[in-house]
Image (tube, rainbow, N blue to C red; front, side, top):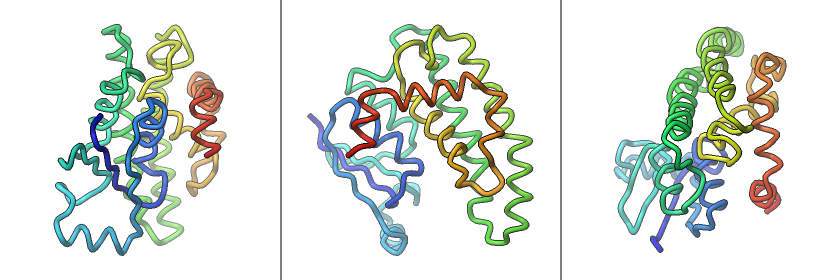
Length: 206
């Protein structure tokens, strides 16, 4: 069993799917959570290979890239990834689309301090990248035989997608409302199925 240490801020963010995946497959890990001043100190020391988190240490070796970490957890955990090649392609495409296209498009507005500018950026985000990503994901789900991208079994892509859908539903992103999800019933059903999974229930009730 490898020694695992996951470093991220003391918030859900990009590390939360990894935390959930590790919990679901039963892999013990050190959940190292940083306050922002700690992060800046560690970054200045060069503790992070690319200057950013999350970072996953496996037996002391540091790795970056959220999707790579999720695939690693799925492989060593023996779950959360389909064996069928086409289902795996659907899962990988959804995972990378949410992690890259959607997250990167949202990022600039997260750091905008001017409320009016933030809302304008969010409106552009919702009408452009978010709409494209959600429509594409909805189409991928239409080709699946279950509530999840790979079928009946929850995968690493579903963790990322469900958490994103739930964030939109929560209303915590200024200018982004739950009503914007109404054209995507399959994505809403995916999030509901995620919440109903016994392992997810156990994780959320800790």
